[in-house]
Image (cartoon, rainbow, N blue to C red; front, top):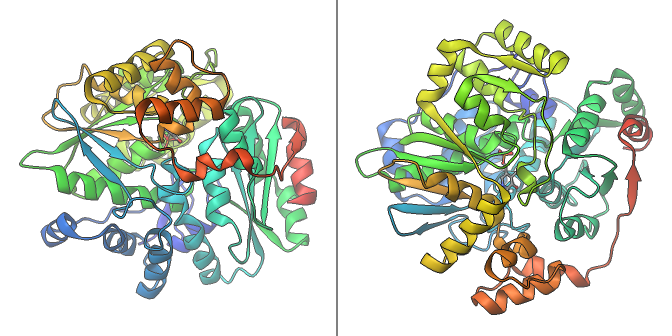
Length: 482
Ligand SMILES: *Cc1c(COP(=O)(O)O)cnc(C)c1O
């Protein structure tokens, strides 16, 4: 199976798609056609391990990888005790037909680990297939959780280096601390003076700059992206939707409510559905930055609006890159259509998809947005009514789920509540401390739920990264030093 760009370039092999990240025409790589799960495979998924599900699904998409290579990547990512849960994820039955799919039991306590424990390994194998001898210099823009998960995923992986760029002041103290204490001789962290979109744009500029590439090439390095625009990031996420839907479907399909930012996680659910997994409707939960909710309701994507910092920073995004892949699928692989919409978005800040596509989209997706007040109320209500503690992102999905009619609804839980302890505690107590570490300890005492070890030990780790940069300088700085 080959991969093509949403803007027309290609086709390329799976390895090239994973290695390049972004296509040369600025589009995103997608499979030329989607593989299907047959009835025997769906049956197999009911009782197989997480690793075996990953082997099955990866094999269908990575035709130029051998079984031994896939097995090596999967076993190191999911079967070597990097995840605190033996099933990798946890499914928790709650009241009212709800279920929580907890994806945060990996080393950095956010769902990004589900992909980023695997992606780096796929990337180094892809590089070998393409005859690439240069060091893979991974550059990732992060609104908080991706950065740490990428640093952890690439740390000390031979033939790679990893650099995380985060918006200064746009991440929590704990998230920042997770990054600046990162160990590993091949890791680097930069605080960018701006918001997440500034960081993402600066990184995109870097990738589209010929002179930056040439400068890197002279130093024997090749840039690559671990952002969720990389197919190697998206692919691992199809695994848990396939598994969870098969396990929970009794008769009908399973609906998912997904806290959404860059549209990667929810898009993986869409791909699982297209492969034949019993995935029903998809509920896209946004925070006050509700550009996606408006888009799903009206078919008009309009980024010309105020940007808000919210209690759910990983969803503070105005341009959701992965939406481009959905447009490509819904339009029947119409690269000209996608190119012109993306062109309008970058030149004018908005585009419209028209009635026909809107109707198609609304058959698959619903949406709702959740303000900070509602986020806190939802955390408090879930704790009071069900003794269930969730983080601020997950709360947005629980809030969206309230008015949603469903036989079986799974709320996707994307971060440990201890990743955002001040906000979560403030939902439960009026006098919450402003310090992440005090709040973490108080939350443990109050709820009796232990924080992940990787977060508890953070406070005492030494700071190893202090670099800062203005958005306009990033390309030139990295050209010389990445
Ligand atoms: C990244 C992230 C999201 C958003 O996921 P997308 O794939 O970008 O839509 C939601 N919640 C948390 C905690 C995250 O880290």
